[in-house]
Length: 88
Image (tube, rainbow, N blue to C red; front, side, top):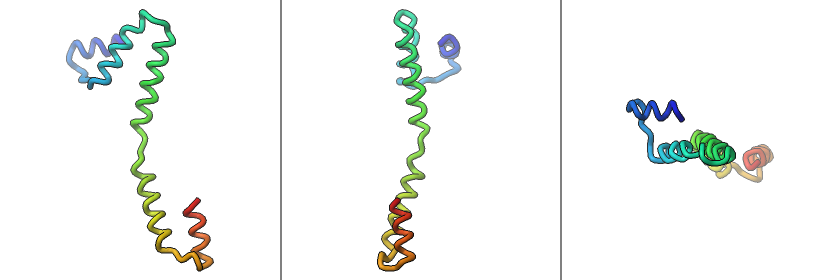
């Protein structure tokens, strides 16, 4: 917190509204139980991890698998194995 407050005071860091709000809450947690500070820090960690997830690659994979399924013939033995593997 101290490092952020000093960087902000010197204009070295630009924070968006959610970061300013979070840091504002963290600066007041000294008055409350340590469990609140831990919960806020865990929230920040998990929020960052969720932002790092890449949903585009799995979406493309599913789309290409669906296209491949539409081209396969369920009557052919080789295609039946591919269909089962793609559906799994």
